[in-house]
Length: 310
Image (tube, rainbow, N blue to C red):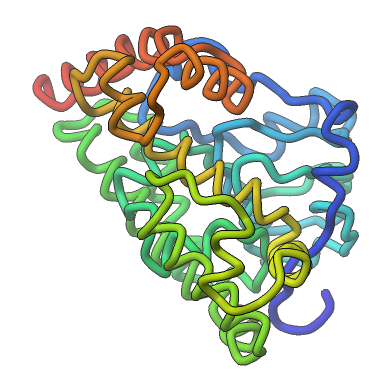
């Protein structure tokens, strides 16, 4: 591995190949997600594909990989690296990735819907910022034990299972962010990263006003071109895409956790025309807002039922 910890989120690959990279509908991405999260072993997933997981991404699923033994090669957003166990890998939703495992590689994969992750840690604090960047770090014994416990809880049916899994998501997010912290702290020292932090703070203040890139650039006293260059260098994502992503996260949260009608969600997120909101949401998320809510209703009911029964 290149050093103790590696930041993998500085490629434009996701934008360049957005028309051709497969988007895998894993564990109900296009249907109803069946549980709070999903756990499986690397053997269970990779052995079915001759130990090669071809390039793909997941629209709204965040994945944590813990490689315990074996090895191979990974490619995350265009950057290749060797798998050197014990290794922790953070793969945010939408990030392009592939794996070529050595046969009999041992490890765990924990897959979490973006909405569940955000419910546990929010979407605006430093935890969320850290986890939106793909990265890798040594998997310390405590990390391995934590993900092993989450996997065992997922496989069982003990009292409070749903609550335990939700708590496990939040704790895993904290532990992963801390493991990745050294590289992110180094990046925060740069002037460009300072601009990025100010840009992210400005988005939080103005995303409902539908500010354009030029508006944010004016707020930061830099040119729109400079702002776009900074966001691509620091995150691999265009400034306009970061703005829209924050707006759509808010829309998804309102659809998932409130009883607002779709038109109300549109107005709450700054759209004057609900029909236009529906078009934007459908383009960004792949399905209309009403369909998105329907997909979430059954899993939510199942989680509540599980928690009450447990």
